[in-house]
Image 1 (cartoon, helix red, strand yellow):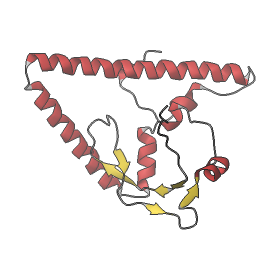
Image 2 (tube, helix red, strand yellow):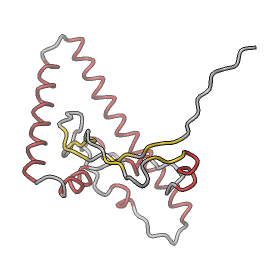
Image 3 (spheres, rainbow, N blue to C red):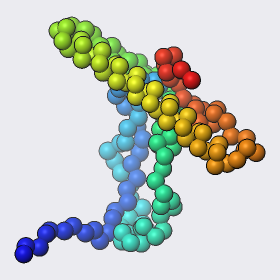
Image 4 (cartoon, helix red, strand yellow):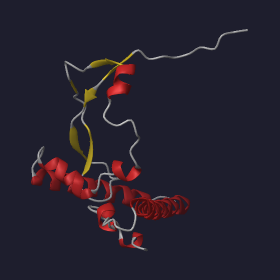
Length: 170
């Protein structure tokens, strides 16, 4: 009987990447950001055994989706210390130009591709609706687990979010 190949990891290298402005037209509101190419390694903690990292990492629990989301306001706040307001505004204008150019080229395509664009817009709208439903469900679960004496409100969940009017169907 043949032995199956296996993979194991001995150590990991921890790198920190800077946040930089991006011109990604799929970011609908505010500035888009991405990770820069240059990375920084901490000399002391750059190479760590996997077992050591797993026992000492800050939080072994996975974060929820709403904790991973970076709102327009949050992205702008993170960028304030890195770039000027003028650079942020210029990046947004550049991104919007790229978006308009993309929409224009989509409009010039055949009727079949226009149907595809409408389907994509519909999928995006459904995705927003699904995200809002999931947040509402999590909000209800949190309120149940915290009990009636809790003061948590929906404002904490949606703070910094800016969604199109079609998404506000509570």
